[in-house]
Image 1 (cartoon, rainbow, N blue to C red):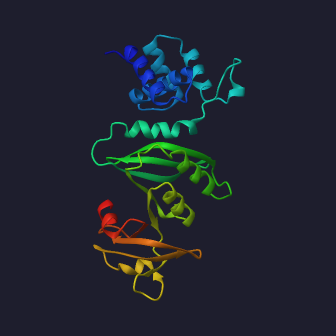
Image 2: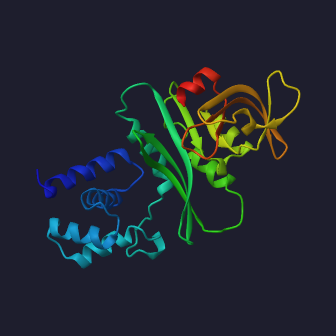
Length: 270
């Protein structure tokens, strides 16, 4: 089947799964995403050139149509122009990803912060699937912008509320640079399970112990692991749960993770 005949079908799928988009918006998003798959590029020049060849239409007109899709409503031509509010699509994107999910009703979400040169920092939530990360929610910040990430990260988590059936087990993972007590609590409020990497120097008092000591001291050799319940503390804020520490061969340092899962569940998820 030719691309010319399948593009409208894909645009229909986009409209069906992202109902917050208007029909014109869904059509443009369909064009963009379809071309990106075939060109393996998101650059507007390569995408518009490929689409112009397939659709047999003027490149300049098509390029302008794609560009206008990114504009704010006030910058578009016409009286009824709307801007795309991507945050309204996040929950629907997640529903689309898990619609045909096969296997156990378990899902791993990854929180990440990526810096794009010196211009932007992108906070994102992605579905982890077979070694890939499928972004379903994101927020752009100016690079080196002062301020806490608490508000945008909590908003991203809230935007996905209700998208996953309540009987699913959801793990939310993040690297140690993102750990914060408020993030741990925000994940729990959604009925999900935090599985957050922490710094090895964080203090831990395991069950049965009287004093706190650094988490990293639990494992001092490659190939070893430790897990147990206890109270950990960072910046004077104590939390109670399960701690897992591993030092895999070939790595320079331990990996320490905190979670509210039991030790048995956490080891299995690891």
